[in-house]
Structure formats: structure tokens, C-alpha cells
Image (cartoon, rainbow, N blue to C red; front, side, top):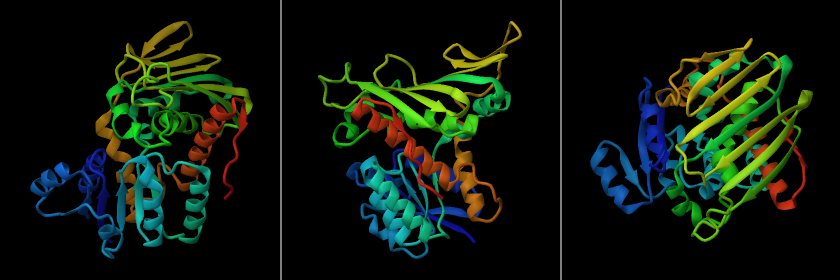
Length: 329
């Protein structure tokens, strides 16, 4: 088997292309982009590939067996449905979709299309620092975690994100920290209480919440605070604090540390470890090529993550704690 791929959207899709083409027996055949200036540029840069603004060429091409969906958030759902109906494996940029009804439709269709595989590009799972954190966590005595997604790129709010009605900072930013925590502790939260504000952006073209905070309750009475912060004057960073009875783990702008037995130990890592981000897509390709059996993120992980995000959104709207309802296997 060879991977013959197509990419929709050449923003972050460029990184998908690099990851796919770094694998043996994998290449990108078609690139779809709607930006006219980008189309001209891409035709010059990739003369050996089909460059188009029509995504139907991808879904109707029987040779293509992997589609990378890196378009704007509001297009993901329809493109996933087309991919499933046309038997395409898919790499999906977060979020998978924008509401629970869409999630249920994808879930039900994927249960019918059992030979199709999808993955979400949740790259913090392959960050070498957080892999070290995962090994150091004392899960037995864990009681509290803070995980803050500091965007540090305010200008990005004022482009396409300001133009779609249902853009969500939970789906676009905090989702990474939710997934990271769930992966680190290997537990799913039971409930969530969330709040948001638009203090910084209410007088700009971006009218949605530019800051969100949530408290998640996990089994064993573990509490987790997660934020998505697009307002702060800050560099792009994933700040994490993990507290157990006998040790604390920290990642912030000053570095990464473990506090244990009254002593502070520096943790050496390559954070933000951008070179390692290809690993998730490469793992998925290896799985498609039957070179491994274990996916870094499986289907249920992805659906559970979206259920958490939708519960958090509901909590902001209803101003109360929400029990998280997961789609059953």
C-alpha cells in the first residue's frame, strides 16, 4: 500500500504536507486552496502536484486514500462527511466539528464505515517535555492541575475567526490543554464549569469570548483548571502546573521544573519541540501502512474530547456546572 494524499487548506496544511512527504511510500497528489494569491504561489512552488480551488476533485479521486483537512473550522464537518462517504482516511485539524449534532452524525457514520480511520492533529501528545511529565506524575496522589493555553497571537483573532458565527476559543485553543490533561492522567472528566469574557476584544471586529476558563472535575476528586487566553500580552506558550502529594511539575516561561523533597530540579527538554510535531501524523500513516497497531490518538479519544468541549460551551451559555455526556462505544 502507498499513501496518496490530498490537503485542503495550506495554512497549517503546509505542516501536514511536510509530515506526509517525510514518510516513505507517501506523497501528496492534490492541494486545495481557496485563496487566489496562494493558488498562484502554490502552482509555482509545486508544479508536480494538482493545485485546485475545488475540493470535489479530492473526494472524487479514487486514487487518493488520505485527506488532510486543514481548512477553516466551519468547513470541517461537511468535509469530514464527504470524506467518509467517499471512503477517505483523514487527518483533521481541531476542532472536528462545531456542535453536538454534527459530532453524533460523524460518530454514527464512522461506525458504519469501519475501515476508515481518522486522526486529529493534537500535537502536545508528542511533545517530549510532556512525555517526561507523564512519566513523572504520581497519579495515586494527584489532586490539582493548571493548564493554560496562552495564544500570544492576538492578530489572528481579526481574520477568518472574526467572520464565522460559531468560532470558539475552547475549540480553537483550550482544546489542546484539555486533550493534554486527559492524556496525562488517563482519566476523563465528569463535569465542567466554564466562564468567558471579551473584555479585550468587545470593541474590535472579534465579538466572541477572547478568554475562557473552566474547572473540570475528574474521578478521584482531581480538580483541573484550564484556560484559553487569546487576550494576554504574552508569547505563545503552554503553561502547566501539576500537583501531587510528593512532587510538583511546572512548565512556564522560565523553564521546566520538578519540585520534590524540598528541592527544585530543572527538566531538560526541547520544548516547544516543534520538530517532533510530525510524529503524530507519521504514526497515523504507519498505522495505515500496517507498520504499527497503536495510534497515539484513537477514535474514541477524539469524540470524548469534543464532548468535553461542547459541555464547556454549554456551561458558559447556561452559567452552571454541566455533566459531560460521552458518546458510547
